[in-house]
Image (cartoon, helix red, strand yellow):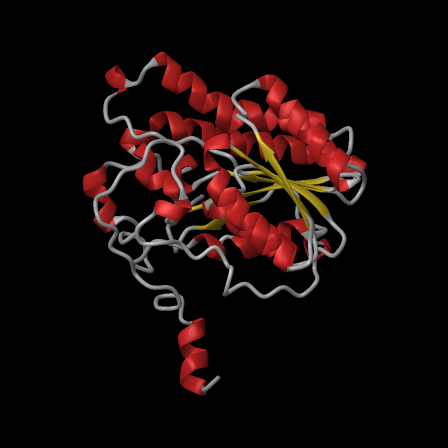
Length: 299
């Protein structure tokens, strides 16, 4: 690599391309396979160093976007992965499983809708059974639907968003504690929306603020048991969530350009934060929300 190439690689403004997505839509939950432009989930860019060797991780929402990038990074770092996702997302999930297996790690596919209480507990039980235990949990699955006016936000949309985004985290974490011992970790995906809620995402933003509080409270509760809990707060990251009703279509071409870096983030740019918070390198980090948002100021 030449000196110019090294500088380019290190420059966060141009390391990943600025994108101008065309107006597009997909039915919920959306597929990476149909996203224009495609995302960088780390298939070709993430290089592991063995920081999670032997770990057994359950990752929810692991078929696409941030969850897929985290799953790929964890595998490259030496972990076996149980991937949860909606059954409609099987095409993306099988692609990620193939990348994990090509890294020499095990991939367990666990399709289930986490809005269902029994599904949450079943996914944890099956993950622990298939992996021979569980010592890392990433609660990443999320639902985001843009609704400009509160009068148009249905009770069903409000309730389902809370069921998927925060109630499922409670249920999965509760079930996982049966399997998590000292040295285990939990990392929850929150959002910059917890601090700077968009007017059309008040229900989604409310769940993300709740995840922050849940993470900090659980970090204190579980610290004496040697289980660390933290969170990662992404900014505008280009994923299928944005085109499956997550953003107004007219806003897509400018998505992420208001950040100080001037561009949207790629899912693989989130992965190192999750790796750090899961690895022993962060042994003294608990109750932290690590912001990965392109420079957007947060508390």
